[in-house]
Length: 151
Image (tube, rainbow, N blue to C red; front, side, top):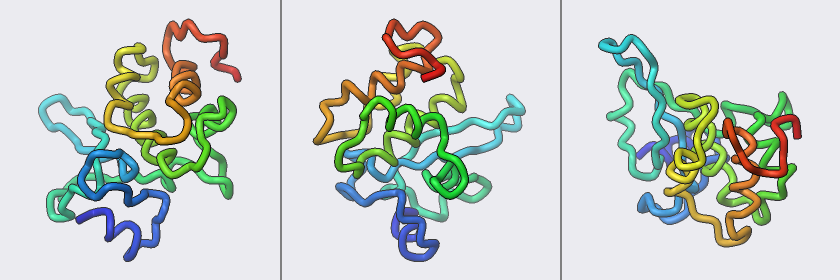
């Protein structure tokens, strides 16, 4: 499976082991594949605990380490979740970040429905989701939220 390979072999520990059954989203990564028919790259969120490595031939895998860090610069998704107090224990945060990041790669100004669908596979036991949703709404074309895109 992809998750133990990422964590043990590559030492990319940002992708978390939560449930091991694809139910919590803590191990979410982005899988990118080129579609020769549409001539576009399509990005999909995926649970690394369920993906056999052999199924990834010809695909690119992006983990939370690949989109930003405190050593380089954090990604706007990470920044906005932090500014909106969308993390407490932080265990679910990498999966949430990757789900939203993948959504934004496919839809730069998502609708609230797309946002809700993107987070549907991610569980958080601490925050009650409101600050996470508020942070993500700042990416929506019409957020209806008190936060602006500059915040």
